[in-house]
Image 1 (cartoon, rainbow over the protein chains, first blue to last red):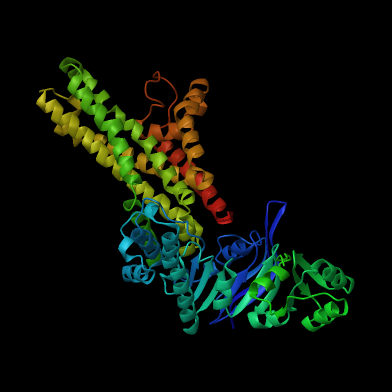
Image 2: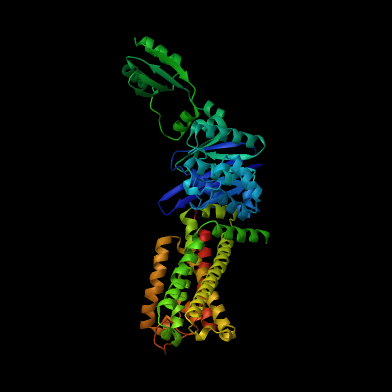
Length: 298
Length: 260
């Protein structure tokens, strides 16, 4: 049974902005699902609708089989990190967590445990206004973890984290998923998602444009043939004439459509010298850029 | 029920872990205790004995206005600092959040008023004692008089209600500076002008109603006697009606608003 179910979800702000447009997806238990999309695609709005912070214009959201607001002590079921803000600057990190824990009916022993988990124990009694962005992000993560929830919704959790922190986060999320917990994570650091997630959802202009396991999506996407030639412009013309998609930057070409053998044979037949020719399997970034409607420069 | 207790505890923890409530108390002391000390120390003994000591306590009438501002800050700070996100994540039933805040801030406003009034009375009594000035209204029999106790209780109730009123205004309007500025201008200028032009309308305005609750039947300090007034029960009902209307509007709008 899916832990998160979204059906026909739409959100309109005012009359002109359709932030989320008829989005449907589900997230299975015990998986890490990456939620990708360019800025303004509607990721944050969708995540906020999952936890009732933003009211949908239409559609249905079910978390653990029902509405978030109907969950008893919701913070013990769903942990949400929705940005590094949300803390009173004059309150200490520990007190910020105590406030959240108290209103959620969570014991203060969890406050100290989560502070230790995110390695903020040393700064726990300092006012939040003195925290760096990374520290605030870890404090926000601590808030999400307070209730030891079975579902984690993380909106750009790697923001402000140093490389060590990102590695820690990756390992931490994998451990949570291995325990059978469910993670929905949005990020613009595609390499992070590629290393962490089982599945991805790609959102573009408010619509889901692709979803599924990363390997399946990558396999469905045509590989890119990369070539380098001193006569790149001539080769580009020949490839375009045969209907291939080509991007050229000086002597480098990125070709979609024909195989590397076909590109090599075309070059050989026209006396074009090649310095480099290979096939590149698309990375998540390629996949994302291709699906989201943007194009990476060759 | 347990969840409600958690919410109350969290609300008081929010207050004790920042300086907003302390700021209200300090501001209340500055506007009421400080003038009381200055008046009692500097005004001639004759003037004080002649009833002038009452003026020393008049700074207390400003405290309820501060309490309204305190209530507004309590709610608008949640939006300003984004803490409303965690508040609603832990308690998605937004109406309950607003109601708990109304009650908590009402209690804190009344407690601050009580502490400030106690300090004012103590200041007047101590300085009066040192200067050997008899304060007619500060005798043991007068203080223990049921009428005096009722007046004092009404002052605390009115301050608590005004603090809660501030919370409902903050929840309704969210923007901190415009709300505080608007309320101060309304309370200190607009209502006075309306009361002068249309006294029969003026007595039903919110701050006039709160004030009549505390003053026991005068609309504004220093206004000519003979203007129409509300009885205390009427003023109480009008004050409660304002709080109810604004609170219901605040709950309704909070439930529909997006937290982005």
